[in-house]
Image (tube, rainbow, N blue to C red; front, side, top):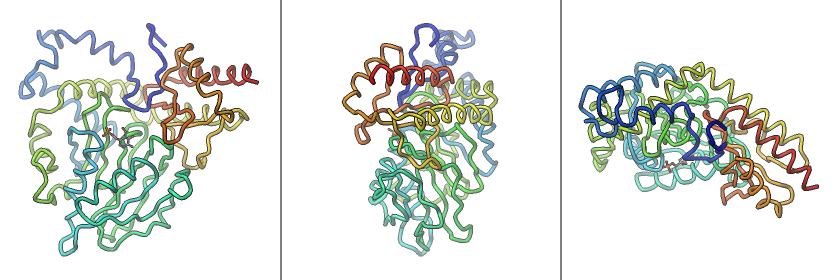
Length: 369
Ligand code: PLP
């Protein structure tokens, strides 16, 4: 990588574009000559106001967010949204007891449904746990409740590496609505907002610094919070205050804004999606052609962002990681629940990084024979 930087395959927090980091460094002491760092600005001042407005506008443009959806910049990460979603939504069906459907496709959706149980009844509409989370259950097989407030999905499971390649469509007359945790693939591909009511994501993979949390919510879903909902986590209140009910994570929003501008220079979401398809295909094609490495995920559901793989000879794992590190290829160790390796190849990972990884893997296989 450029200027002594490593190819960082971390699942999150993960690599950011070097250009963005350089720009932030250049502007650190005095943003646009104003004599202050963005970190030191009042969130109510005109300088930060312009940064916030630009970030909202660029994100709306990048994802083609329709006018009837609000964009909220919140805090607490996706784990906090596991509680904030049910608090804001699970009571929305008048005359029914609070209830939601959850589709379980990996570690993150397991966590989401566990947290929701504090606020209402949870129905597991589908789960791939018995099959080891290697695929996405088809929507035709989901057992949705008649009286659910919403159906929750994790549209890219970061640990097992399965991704919905199409936003599932549930019956418009069901009275339910899709809520998606898109933390680990937000902005890597378009989102079909005609099929979802809420999309949320922690920022630390494709957006910027950890802590900033993005929520995109249809405006008819803002007014159903349970009375116990903390004011700072009530979507209506956050929305009406333009995400400044409390002091927002100003510096994280600024960096996110720089990432949005960078994405526009990459041809927007359509451009980055083409690059992501090319990177993922190169890596999966190599894995499938090799007898030394294996990825067991159903090819129809493989994540473009998180590529777990195993060495057939697991005794070579430590040697692999050490040799990779010596080549500047870091953070390849798989999650402890899955073992083996994982290459996270988010938006900021260049094709050259994936090519360098494959070249190293070929060589490691050769020298291990
Ligand atoms: N959901 C998904 C899909 C994730 O990948 C992660 C990983 O960080 C989380 C939720 C948890 O997010 P956080 O730790 O930011 O709350």
